Image 1 (tube, helix red, strand yellow):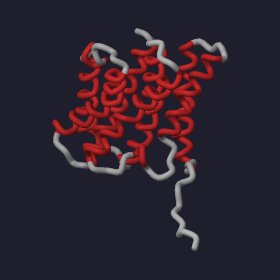
Image 2 (cartoon, one colour):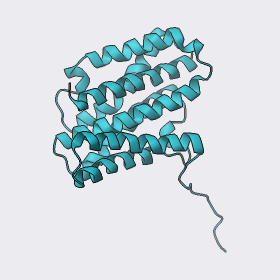
Image 3 (tube, helix red, strand yellow):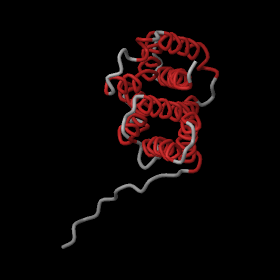
Image 4 (cartoon, one colour):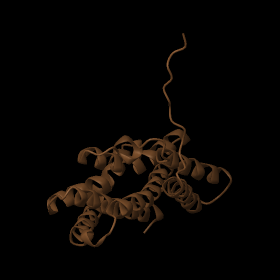
Length: 207
C-alpha cells in the first residue's frame, strides 16, 4: 500500500470521527452520525479529485473508505457519552485529520505533475473542505473561519513546506511527512497557545 493511500485512509478515519462527534453534540440518530462522518471524511478529497479530473473519485475507486467512515460513526455513536469534553476531542482530532489530509492532497497533486500553485491549493482543499462542509451543515461557525486561528494558514504552510523540501532534494515521502508535521505544529500551537493571525479592526473614518 502506497504512502498516498495510507494518508487518504488516515484522514478519512480521523475526519469521520470528528463528523460523528459533531453529530453526537447535535444528538442525532445513527443515520445522522453516518451522514456526518462520511461527509466530513470524503468531502475534501472528493472536491480535490473532481477539480483535478481524477477519475474515478478516490472513494468510488475504493469503497472501503466509506465503510471505514461508517464504522467510525458507529463506534462514536456507542462511546461518545464516555468522553468528558467532546468538543476538545473534536478540535484535536480535527487538527490531526487536517494535517494528514493536507499531506494527502499535496501528494496526489504532485503525483499528477501539477504546478506548485495547484499543489498548494489541492493540499488546502483536501484538508479544509470536509470540515467546512461538516460545520456548515450542522449550523456552526466553521473551524476554518474562526477569528484569527491558524487553520487554512497551517494547511498552506504544510503544503509549502513539502514543496520546499522537494526543491531541496528530499524524497517525496519525507516531504509529505514534513508537510503533515508543519501543518499540525501550527494548528496545535493555535489550539494550545493561542497562536493567531491579526484580525481586521474597523476604525471610524478620519474627518
